[in-house]
Length: 249
Image 1 (cartoon, rainbow, N blue to C red):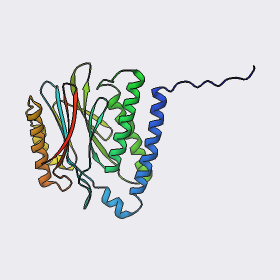
Image 2 (cartoon, rainbow, N blue to C red):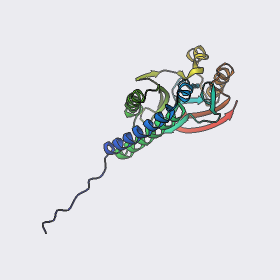
Image 3 (cartoon, rainbow, N blue to C red):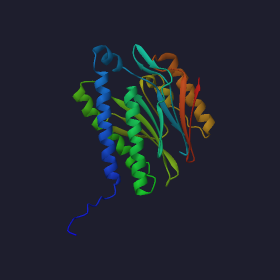
Image 4 (cartoon, helix red, strand yellow):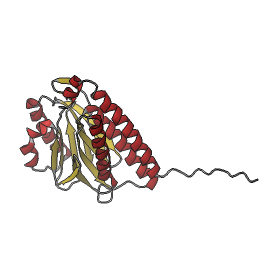
């Protein structure tokens, strides 16, 4: 039989990543195009803001990340219960920026982390592909937003649990840059109000103490920042155990 049988090779994580990235580019372009259809929509959505902050214990065994729940495009409020804290394979992400794009980036970022981890049959370390993926997606989003003619800046805080080192790593992912933070960080419009509180914060040793301090900072930001409300979403990593929740301040 001279007929050649076609052989389908198994997909690698590179193939899966390429597919995920293409899906992200398509959906992000559609999202931005919808935002830019009218000048009124563009002007409203270009000024979105929020408050996201993250705190860690001195030994890096506990990490807490919190955000408010308001999705706004000043002077409009679109959602008072918008979740901005996402879990991924190795940690927790908190996003600030255009609401729809926060969801898009977080979704594809999470899918890609999972596909790479599954393909390698191991959980990636915090210092590995997790933070490099953000730069990959941020570059694509920057190019797409320029093509669509709309500002689409996004910032993320990421607390990643390193399963080998058995401790948390805190990254501030802003623009095309990545900053490793030793104990605390904040992003979003309300972060300006609590900047000193976050930077001067004295790390605590227990989950409840850290969560209480984060709660008080978010409450302070919500009192003065119109883009921040009192619906708190939070994520906690304690000795490698992940927890998510929400409450009203």
